[in-house]
Image 1 (tube, rainbow, N blue to C red):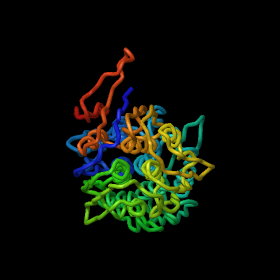
Image 2: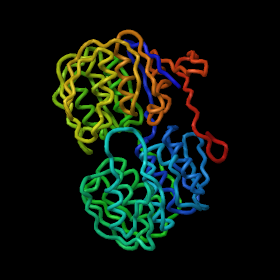
Image 3: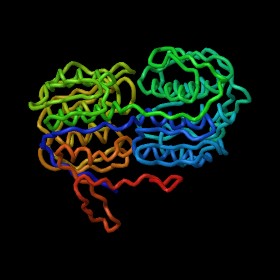
Image 4: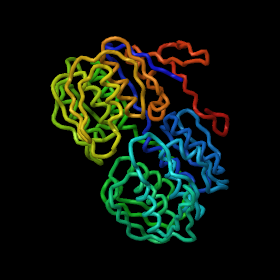
Length: 443
């Protein structure tokens, strides 16, 4: 079991590059099975979720290699359309294989996906969209059995702008005959990234980033090569970390447009932020002040994934701020840890009232990906030492977070607990995570 040990009140200084987007690369990796041959995905972050996707691809018969930040997937010999329960339980994004498997093989079999415990996240919208295209989907003892002798394009109206359902519908529609129109589609930048990768494969797709996505199916596809966008939630996390600890940092490869609500909130809280092209500069030298209420919402609203890290930064500031979480039922798991640090936070259903105060180090445990990042953000601005467990969650979305923070001057160590139950110290900033081995001998 790995543990972070963080000594707070160390200002962050310098520059750092933002790695590729987890939420973008996962559907793109699923899309690689749509065509025979070798696709190359650049700016692919070395994350637990990414290598879990690689393991699924291998089990389906693909050859996968991770090399110098690029994932190479050869889907020529795709030989299976079923995914085991253990692989499905690794993460929620595994459900994104439904659409491309139906498009490529006409069948798919899998259980419901796993992931962070953020409350009910049914995949009924995914299933309904695929059924609209002609798939026959049955639930047999918890396994989804999907068959589609022929997929046919048609108009699909999503009840909610679900990101995953939009992606699965797009992935299936490229293999359907005729034109598919997806209405009330999710507008997230990651949808645009998926569209651009599909276009690199020869697909005819347009409209991503708006409420209507159109896919002209039945086009012969070929392998694609694409560079994934930077991770906007990682960008939000770095910005919140500087706001919490203080300092001056330049973020490289960060698109300010994708984090505009976060920048607006931190600016209102007292940070000085400038952006130019793919660079963002942030300065924070005084305690953060309270801001207007934060409502999480689908893009382009305030992202639910950025809510925990912003709350963590404001918890160590001054004044009262209200957070209203409209996306996930259990998105306040980090509050318990923040309160152990002395934070003054009251939760009432979907609302959390944060009254800023001085935070102190504590023994903490991460219970989900973004909640774990929030505890790190708070620890950077707290007095004394914090120990944070549950790093497996954080590794799902942040590539060697401790290395990045150490490069900026943070006092953060990663410890691995050996079988003797003692704590074995590692060098400051040394990542101990070793990705799953994939074909070609690359890790």
